[in-house]
Length: 262
Image 1: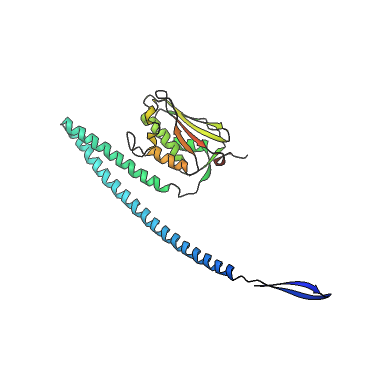
Image 2: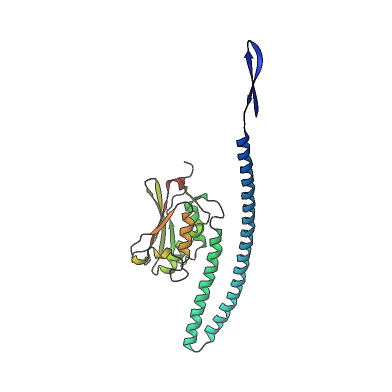
Protein backbone atom coordinates (compact mmCIF):
# COMPACT_ATOMS: atom_id res chain seq x y z
CA UNK A 1 0.00 0.00 0.00
CA UNK A 2 1.28 3.45 -0.94
CA UNK A 3 0.21 6.64 0.79
CA UNK A 4 1.37 10.14 0.04
CA UNK A 5 1.50 13.42 1.88
CA UNK A 6 2.42 16.88 0.54
CA UNK A 7 5.46 18.35 2.32
CA UNK A 8 8.08 21.05 1.94
CA UNK A 9 11.60 19.84 1.22
CA UNK A 10 14.25 22.53 1.35
CA UNK A 11 11.47 25.10 0.96
CA UNK A 12 10.29 23.36 -2.17
CA UNK A 13 6.87 21.59 -2.43
CA UNK A 14 7.37 17.86 -2.53
CA UNK A 15 5.51 14.59 -1.89
CA UNK A 16 6.39 12.20 0.87
CA UNK A 17 5.60 8.59 0.01
CA UNK A 18 4.80 5.89 2.58
CA UNK A 19 5.18 2.26 1.58
CA UNK A 20 3.21 -0.02 3.90
CA UNK A 21 3.40 -3.79 3.77
CA UNK A 22 -0.19 -5.08 4.16
CA UNK A 23 0.46 -8.65 3.14
CA UNK A 24 -0.56 -10.07 6.52
CA UNK A 25 -3.72 -7.97 6.59
CA UNK A 26 -4.75 -9.13 3.10
CA UNK A 27 -4.18 -12.75 4.11
CA UNK A 28 -6.40 -12.28 7.16
CA UNK A 29 -9.08 -10.52 5.09
CA UNK A 30 -9.11 -13.38 2.59
CA UNK A 31 -9.37 -15.92 5.40
CA UNK A 32 -12.23 -14.00 7.02
CA UNK A 33 -14.06 -13.76 3.69
CA UNK A 34 -13.68 -17.49 3.12
CA UNK A 35 -14.89 -18.22 6.65
CA UNK A 36 -17.89 -15.91 6.14
CA UNK A 37 -18.79 -17.82 2.97
CA UNK A 38 -18.61 -21.12 4.85
CA UNK A 39 -20.83 -19.80 7.64
CA UNK A 40 -23.34 -18.47 5.12
CA UNK A 41 -23.49 -21.86 3.42
CA UNK A 42 -23.98 -23.60 6.79
CA UNK A 43 -26.73 -21.15 7.74
CA UNK A 44 -28.50 -21.68 4.43
CA UNK A 45 -28.29 -25.46 4.84
CA UNK A 46 -29.56 -25.21 8.44
CA UNK A 47 -32.51 -23.06 7.39
CA UNK A 48 -33.41 -25.53 4.64
CA UNK A 49 -33.27 -28.51 7.02
CA UNK A 50 -35.23 -26.61 9.65
CA UNK A 51 -37.97 -25.75 7.13
CA UNK A 52 -38.22 -29.39 6.08
CA UNK A 53 -38.39 -30.60 9.69
CA UNK A 54 -41.01 -28.01 10.55
CA UNK A 55 -43.09 -29.01 7.54
CA UNK A 56 -42.73 -32.69 8.41
CA UNK A 57 -43.71 -32.19 12.04
CA UNK A 58 -46.66 -29.99 11.04
CA UNK A 59 -47.99 -32.61 8.62
CA UNK A 60 -47.39 -35.39 11.16
CA UNK A 61 -49.23 -33.49 13.91
CA UNK A 62 -52.13 -32.84 11.57
CA UNK A 63 -52.41 -36.48 10.53
CA UNK A 64 -52.12 -37.78 14.10
CA UNK A 65 -54.73 -35.26 15.20
CA UNK A 66 -57.14 -36.49 12.54
CA UNK A 67 -56.69 -40.12 13.57
CA UNK A 68 -57.12 -39.23 17.24
CA UNK A 69 -60.40 -37.53 16.41
CA UNK A 70 -61.62 -40.78 14.85
CA UNK A 71 -60.44 -42.82 17.85
CA UNK A 72 -62.10 -40.45 20.31
CA UNK A 73 -65.33 -40.60 18.32
CA UNK A 74 -65.52 -44.40 18.42
CA UNK A 75 -64.48 -44.52 22.06
CA UNK A 76 -67.23 -42.05 22.89
CA UNK A 77 -69.80 -44.25 21.17
CA UNK A 78 -68.52 -47.35 22.98
CA UNK A 79 -68.60 -45.52 26.30
CA UNK A 80 -72.24 -44.49 25.96
CA UNK A 81 -73.49 -47.79 24.53
CA UNK A 82 -71.52 -50.13 26.78
CA UNK A 83 -73.53 -51.99 29.40
CA UNK A 84 -70.52 -53.52 31.14
CA UNK A 85 -69.31 -50.97 33.76
CA UNK A 86 -65.78 -52.32 33.57
CA UNK A 87 -65.58 -51.74 29.82
CA UNK A 88 -67.13 -48.30 30.29
CA UNK A 89 -64.33 -47.50 32.73
CA UNK A 90 -61.73 -48.65 30.20
CA UNK A 91 -63.30 -46.44 27.50
CA UNK A 92 -63.21 -43.47 29.86
CA UNK A 93 -59.52 -44.03 30.59
CA UNK A 94 -58.74 -44.45 26.88
CA UNK A 95 -60.53 -41.17 26.11
CA UNK A 96 -58.52 -39.41 28.83
CA UNK A 97 -55.30 -40.80 27.34
CA UNK A 98 -56.37 -39.52 23.91
CA UNK A 99 -56.90 -36.06 25.35
CA UNK A 100 -53.41 -36.13 26.85
CA UNK A 101 -51.94 -37.08 23.48
CA UNK A 102 -53.76 -34.14 21.88
CA UNK A 103 -52.27 -31.84 24.55
CA UNK A 104 -48.79 -33.25 23.90
CA UNK A 105 -49.16 -32.60 20.18
CA UNK A 106 -50.21 -29.04 20.94
CA UNK A 107 -47.18 -28.67 23.20
CA UNK A 108 -44.78 -29.68 20.41
CA UNK A 109 -46.43 -27.10 18.17
CA UNK A 110 -45.95 -24.35 20.74
CA UNK A 111 -42.45 -25.49 21.71
CA UNK A 112 -41.26 -25.14 18.11
CA UNK A 113 -42.13 -21.44 18.23
CA UNK A 114 -39.97 -20.60 21.26
CA UNK A 115 -37.11 -18.31 20.28
CA UNK A 116 -38.17 -18.15 16.62
CA UNK A 117 -39.25 -14.52 16.99
CA UNK A 118 -36.93 -12.07 18.70
CA UNK A 119 -37.99 -10.80 22.15
CA UNK A 120 -39.93 -7.51 22.15
CA UNK A 121 -41.20 -5.01 24.71
CA UNK A 122 -44.75 -5.91 25.77
CA UNK A 123 -47.26 -4.24 28.07
CA UNK A 124 -47.99 -6.71 30.90
CA UNK A 125 -51.49 -5.39 31.54
CA UNK A 126 -52.45 -5.80 27.87
CA UNK A 127 -50.93 -9.29 27.66
CA UNK A 128 -52.95 -10.48 30.67
CA UNK A 129 -56.12 -9.07 29.10
CA UNK A 130 -55.35 -10.94 25.88
CA UNK A 131 -54.74 -14.21 27.74
CA UNK A 132 -57.91 -13.81 29.83
CA UNK A 133 -59.95 -13.39 26.65
CA UNK A 134 -58.71 -16.80 25.45
CA UNK A 135 -58.71 -18.79 28.71
CA UNK A 136 -61.62 -21.10 29.70
CA UNK A 137 -62.39 -19.19 32.88
CA UNK A 138 -66.06 -20.00 33.37
CA UNK A 139 -67.28 -18.15 36.51
CA UNK A 140 -63.72 -17.45 37.72
CA UNK A 141 -62.89 -13.73 37.85
CA UNK A 142 -59.52 -12.33 36.74
CA UNK A 143 -58.39 -9.18 38.54
CA UNK A 144 -55.72 -7.47 36.45
CA UNK A 145 -53.95 -5.09 38.83
CA UNK A 146 -50.82 -4.85 36.68
CA UNK A 147 -50.19 -1.15 35.98
CA UNK A 148 -50.66 -0.07 32.39
CA UNK A 149 -47.38 0.91 30.81
CA UNK A 150 -45.29 -1.61 32.77
CA UNK A 151 -43.45 -3.42 29.98
CA UNK A 152 -41.28 -6.53 29.94
CA UNK A 153 -38.77 -7.58 27.31
CA UNK A 154 -39.79 -11.14 26.51
CA UNK A 155 -40.53 -13.71 23.85
CA UNK A 156 -43.89 -12.92 22.16
CA UNK A 157 -45.13 -16.28 23.51
CA UNK A 158 -45.31 -14.78 27.00
CA UNK A 159 -49.07 -14.58 26.47
CA UNK A 160 -48.99 -18.41 26.71
CA UNK A 161 -47.45 -18.12 30.17
CA UNK A 162 -50.35 -16.07 31.49
CA UNK A 163 -52.84 -18.33 29.69
CA UNK A 164 -51.30 -21.44 31.27
CA UNK A 165 -51.44 -19.87 34.72
CA UNK A 166 -55.14 -19.13 34.32
CA UNK A 167 -55.89 -22.53 32.79
CA UNK A 168 -54.06 -24.38 35.57
CA UNK A 169 -55.77 -22.33 38.26
CA UNK A 170 -59.21 -23.19 36.88
CA UNK A 171 -58.33 -26.87 36.39
CA UNK A 172 -56.78 -27.54 39.78
CA UNK A 173 -57.99 -24.76 42.06
CA UNK A 174 -61.14 -26.66 43.09
CA UNK A 175 -62.81 -23.93 45.20
CA UNK A 176 -61.23 -21.12 43.17
CA UNK A 177 -63.23 -17.95 42.48
CA UNK A 178 -60.57 -15.33 41.70
CA UNK A 179 -57.20 -15.04 39.93
CA UNK A 180 -55.24 -11.85 40.58
CA UNK A 181 -52.23 -10.39 38.76
CA UNK A 182 -50.11 -7.71 40.41
CA UNK A 183 -46.63 -6.22 40.34
CA UNK A 184 -44.11 -5.51 43.09
CA UNK A 185 -40.73 -3.80 42.85
CA UNK A 186 -37.77 -5.68 44.32
CA UNK A 187 -34.77 -3.38 44.21
CA UNK A 188 -33.99 -2.79 40.55
CA UNK A 189 -36.07 -5.82 39.54
CA UNK A 190 -39.83 -6.28 39.45
CA UNK A 191 -41.91 -9.31 40.37
CA UNK A 192 -45.06 -10.15 38.44
CA UNK A 193 -47.39 -12.11 40.72
CA UNK A 194 -50.24 -14.44 39.83
CA UNK A 195 -52.21 -15.68 42.83
CA UNK A 196 -55.56 -17.37 43.32
CA UNK A 197 -57.85 -18.46 46.15
CA UNK A 198 -57.90 -22.15 45.22
CA UNK A 199 -56.35 -25.14 46.97
CA UNK A 200 -52.74 -24.20 46.28
CA UNK A 201 -49.74 -26.42 45.50
CA UNK A 202 -48.52 -29.07 47.99
CA UNK A 203 -45.15 -28.26 49.58
CA UNK A 204 -43.41 -31.24 47.99
CA UNK A 205 -44.52 -30.33 44.48
CA UNK A 206 -43.54 -26.67 44.20
CA UNK A 207 -40.57 -27.43 41.94
CA UNK A 208 -41.82 -30.65 40.41
CA UNK A 209 -44.78 -28.87 38.76
CA UNK A 210 -42.26 -27.31 36.37
CA UNK A 211 -41.02 -30.72 35.20
CA UNK A 212 -42.26 -32.07 31.90
CA UNK A 213 -44.74 -34.87 32.39
CA UNK A 214 -45.53 -34.11 36.02
CA UNK A 215 -49.17 -33.49 36.87
CA UNK A 216 -52.65 -34.77 36.38
CA UNK A 217 -52.72 -34.02 32.65
CA UNK A 218 -49.63 -33.65 30.47
CA UNK A 219 -47.61 -31.52 32.88
CA UNK A 220 -46.23 -29.52 29.95
CA UNK A 221 -47.74 -26.06 30.40
CA UNK A 222 -45.55 -24.83 33.24
CA UNK A 223 -42.42 -26.43 31.75
CA UNK A 224 -43.10 -24.54 28.52
CA UNK A 225 -43.79 -21.34 30.44
CA UNK A 226 -40.49 -21.50 32.31
CA UNK A 227 -38.54 -21.93 29.06
CA UNK A 228 -40.36 -19.01 27.43
CA UNK A 229 -39.51 -16.72 30.36
CA UNK A 230 -35.93 -17.98 30.63
CA UNK A 231 -35.08 -16.61 27.17
CA UNK A 232 -34.76 -13.09 28.61
CA UNK A 233 -33.64 -14.11 32.11
CA UNK A 234 -37.03 -14.02 33.86
CA UNK A 235 -37.16 -16.52 36.73
CA UNK A 236 -40.36 -18.41 37.57
CA UNK A 237 -41.37 -20.11 40.82
CA UNK A 238 -44.36 -21.02 43.01
CA UNK A 239 -44.41 -19.57 46.54
CA UNK A 240 -47.99 -19.99 47.78
CA UNK A 241 -49.12 -21.65 51.01
CA UNK A 242 -50.81 -25.04 50.52
CA UNK A 243 -54.53 -24.77 51.21
CA UNK A 244 -54.50 -20.98 50.75
CA UNK A 245 -54.12 -20.76 46.98
CA UNK A 246 -51.31 -20.85 44.45
CA UNK A 247 -48.91 -17.94 44.04
CA UNK A 248 -46.56 -17.77 41.06
CA UNK A 249 -43.78 -15.20 40.93
CA UNK A 250 -41.99 -14.06 37.77
CA UNK A 251 -38.90 -12.04 38.69
CA UNK A 252 -37.93 -9.72 35.85
CA UNK A 253 -34.34 -8.40 35.88
CA UNK A 254 -33.74 -4.66 35.66
CA UNK A 255 -32.65 -4.82 32.03
CA UNK A 256 -35.86 -6.58 30.98
CA UNK A 257 -38.51 -4.19 32.31
CA UNK A 258 -39.41 -0.54 31.93
CA UNK A 259 -42.23 1.95 32.25
CA UNK A 260 -43.51 3.11 28.88
CA UNK A 261 -42.73 6.73 28.16
CA UNK A 262 -40.10 7.02 30.90
